[in-house]
Image (cartoon, rainbow, N blue to C red; front, side):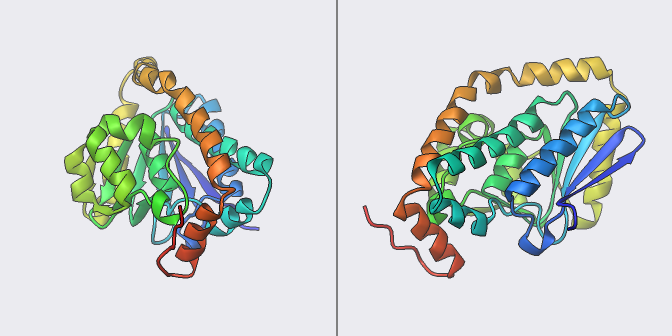
Length: 259
């Protein structure tokens, strides 16, 4: 079976590529776990100073794997909780490793994919990238990045708009909000991301590590909200309402949500 992540090292920079291009790098449990392993591998290598996170194919990450999520709606609460704890561990690992993680985003960056993007230290995006949350439209909700971090980046009102309305935003709109760092033409994405990574490599590694820890202080203070999110989604994904949202998306129709 082909690996769900590709791990490459060039001098002091590690590039990790999400590698499920046939499903727009949707986050199934295997990919989540493989990404955590890759990040821990990078963390344990003293030569490495920066991690670049990319997506194979036409998208960066389209969010959770729909087929896997549909199975969870019919599974046990324990199964849903275990899945969510793995997802939380992925976000915590991106935040927690001492090395900066730069997201190089092209195509769709939506739902859980956007929460993964938010967890990264920096984001460089292609002009053709699209950002957004889809949860309330497809039987889910953000729990691991939007409540803790996006509202700090873009403001509470804008964060609620992004969550409640489930719109897609252009890279230019995301940059203007402070959601991402820089937008470049598609052909310049890799070059620009590597440029930023190389600038970091030239800085004091201890200073960068400590600076990341300091920037993470507010996130650590809000960690209990992610734990609450695990319990909320464990409950919600077991409801017919959540299943209807997921099935409607799969069947390409409007969901019929009943109170």
